[in-house]
Length: 75
Length: 363
Image (cartoon, rainbow over all chains, first blue to last red):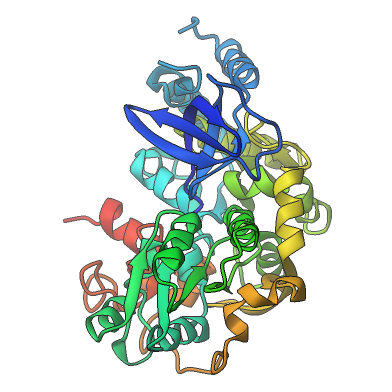
C-alpha cells in the first residue's frame, strides 16, 4: 500500500508534473512535496502524488561508501 | 542504469550478504512493519539467503490487513446505500467482511464501486456523478494520509459538494509502541518503513531504542537497503548500542516532509483507532477535523462503527503480531488460499500470508 515508485520528472506545469519510468508516463501532483523538483530530478511517487525528491548525490555517496567498505571495484 | 539502480546491483548485494553471514553469529528475530518490505524481502529472494541466525518476522505493516473488522463492515454497509459510489484502492476489493461479503460481492449485488489509482481520480468520479455522493475509502499509513488530505483540499478549492472520505488511516509509531509493550512479542530488532518515514522522518521512532532498548533502522526497498539495515542491526546488537538509524537518507530526512505533515495536520486530527489483531491503540488513527466536516463520510447519516464477530478460524491477528508464522495457521493453504481467502492477510498482495503462499510454499 505504501508502495511508491521513483520516477523522473520530464515536465512541470504549476501543481502537476509529467513523470516517466521505463517508458511509462504519468501525471503527478506536486501539492505535498517539500522541495520543488526540477526537470531531470527523480521523485518518489505514491498514489498520484510526488512525496519526496530523491537525493542523487546522497545515493552516489552511499553506494561509494559500500563499495569502499566492501573493497569492491567501482561498478 | 541510473544512479539509483546500484541499490540492486548483484555484486554489491552479494558482497554485503557475505559480510552479514560472517558477522551475524548471534541469533535474532527482526520484524518489518511495512507491506512493501514484506514483498521486497520475499520477492528479491533475500529471505531464503539470510543466514540461519536471522529470522524475518512480518508485522502489522499491511494497511488492508490491519483495517479492523468493524471498519470493513462499515464500508460494506456504506456500499449498500443507493446514493453512494465507493471509490477505493484495488486491494480493498476482496477483503472479507461479515457473512462472506466483500466489495466485489457488493458490486455484484448492485453497489457502485470504482477502483482508483489515486484519490484524485475519485474527484473525477464525483464530478461525473453530481447526483451521488462519492466516498473514498481512506485506508493507509502516514504515506497515504497526506495524499488524501491534499485531495480533500483540492475538493474544497473546486467547491465539490459530493466527495467524502471515510478516514481509517493509521499511524505506525503508536502500533510499534503497542508491540514493544507486549511481553509476549518476541522481536529483537525492527526495520522501519521507508515511505512512511519519507513523511514523518526518523525522529518519531526514537522511543524504540530510548525506552525499549531495541535497535531499529529506517530503510528502503532495494535488496541493498535491506542488507544495509540488517548489517547495522547486527553491529548495534554486538556493541550493545541500540539506536534508531536512517539507512534511507536518499529519501528520508530526519524531520520528514514538513509540507506533507502540515497538510495532513490541517485536515486530520489524531484519534484512538481499532487495529485488527492489535485492538484499540490510543492516538493511532486520523479523523477529519471539524473544519473539513463536509468531506467526512463518518458524519453521513447511518454511518458508524459497530461491533462485528471476528472471521471464524482466521488467525490474521496473530500473524500481524508476529506470534504465528503464516504456515502455522490451521487454515493456511487448506481453507485459505489467495483464490479463496478467509482473512485479509491472504487477500492483500502485501499480506504476510499471501507473500508466504506466493514465495515460500514448498510444492
